[in-house]
Amino acid sequence: MTEVERKHKKKDKKKDKKKDKTKKSGVRTKFLLESLRQDYYTLQDENQKLREIIVDRIPGAADAIFTECCPPRKKVNSIDELAQMSNMTIQEEDEDEDDDE
Image (tube, rainbow, N blue to C red):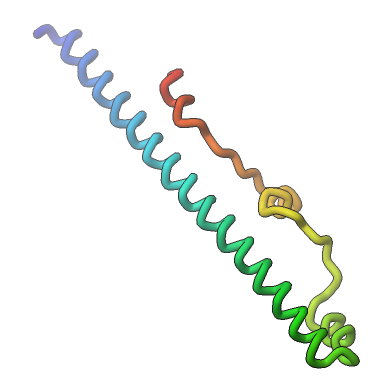
């Protein structure tokens, strides 16, 4: 095997390792993102239930409690909308994108 072939083989091996590492990172990111989405919706449901309990049990003070404890904020419908409000970008990569390189 010549020096050029060896360098080429080494370069290809390094490229393959980088590709595998990128793919694994994308999978981890997707898993984390899905986990955060699930947590967001679970907490949103729990928050709504707690608000309903407060309104049911102490209706006269509910508005005062919400005003004091929960400053007005824009209601968001999804975690993606929340991310946009926070100037974050959530991008989900297709696993096929890695194959294009």
